[in-house]
Image (cartoon, rainbow, N blue to C red):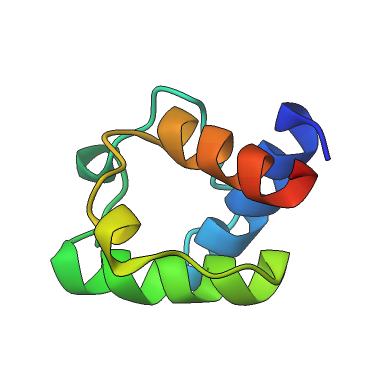
Length: 81
């Protein structure tokens, strides 16, 4: 799965999770850019991401993403081996 496809699926997941239709994430998006994205929502969102992509994050990875681009890179690694 390429970065564009991962970002598109992440945007769809985030739009639903944060109840923000049409939300488009970019590699530079940070939590502060999305209304309602606090620490609890972060954990819940990553759980939804795990389900959407059928992967699992290590507990050490959960708090390590500074922006969506880092999340995309980690997903790309997990999905493409």
